[in-house]
Amino acid sequence: MERDLESYQPAPIEIKEGVNRKIFMCVQLDPEEIKDQEIFRKYASDNSIPLPSWYIAYRVTGDQRYDLKFMCSMKRDVKKAIDMMNMYSSWLLTMPVLEDEVISYLRQGVIYPCGRSITYNPIIVVNVRKIIDSKMDLEALLRLNYFTLNWVIDNMLVPGKVESWYIIQDLKDVGLSSIPGNMMKTMSERLSVYFSLRLGKCFTINVPLAIKAFWNMTKIFIDKETRKKIFIQRKGWEKLLSQFITPENLERKYGGAQDNREGEFYPFRV
Image 1 (cartoon, one colour):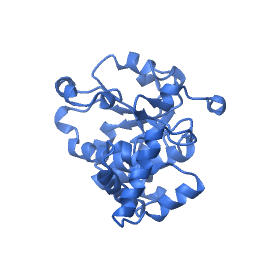
Image 2 (image 1 turned 90 degrees about the horizontal axis):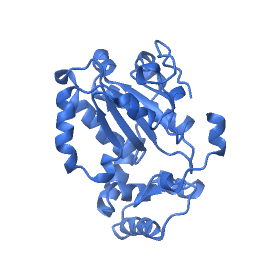
Image 3 (image 1 turned 180 degrees about the vertical axis):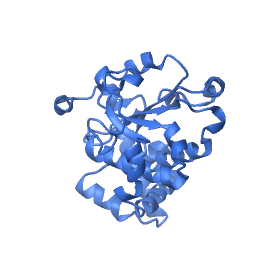
Image 4 (image 1 turned 60 degrees about the horizontal axis):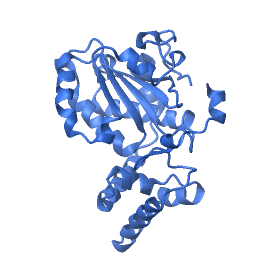
């Protein structure tokens, strides 16, 4: 599949769907998007807000269009987009995460990549039962995610072709009362800033009945574009996953053809 990726060209809907851009690099922007970038930079200039060195460097050496990402993430509220940039800058000072910090969790298979979707998005499995059993705190969970997602960016994403990932969040053997809800919520909030617009889809499977019922009641209050990314399934998720991921890119326990990984989670395999 990695060889096929070399010749892969994303369909227009995989580059931009409606107003929602999925591919930011190595593509031509629309006039309104260029205007958003100009608004971002003008606001910073007019308010004497210094643009960080990493932002300037990216614009010179290979523009990742962070300004547009921040504007899109904040629904084009330029003040919130600038605040997001500053949060991202502060986070960069804590990078990189060294392997030794998270090696025990990596070997346990708390989170790991396992293949690609039919549109070549990396598939990342998050085992919530193992998060609980490991007794990790929030900071350890965040650092583990930062390490893994940065590895995926460096080894599995391709600018201009594949710039987002799919998550399988497995709640097997997790009761409602044991779900680390606050940790998972904080993690999601942080990742949405530090890995802005990298989430393509999130499949939460094996969910307790109460969570499925709660989702059915609350999803009407979530915007349509976000709902397109989120799938919460108690049963029947094998058929759902097969719509987006071929069997050779899924473990058998998820309805695929890969052997289930047992004790062979790290080093990661592409």
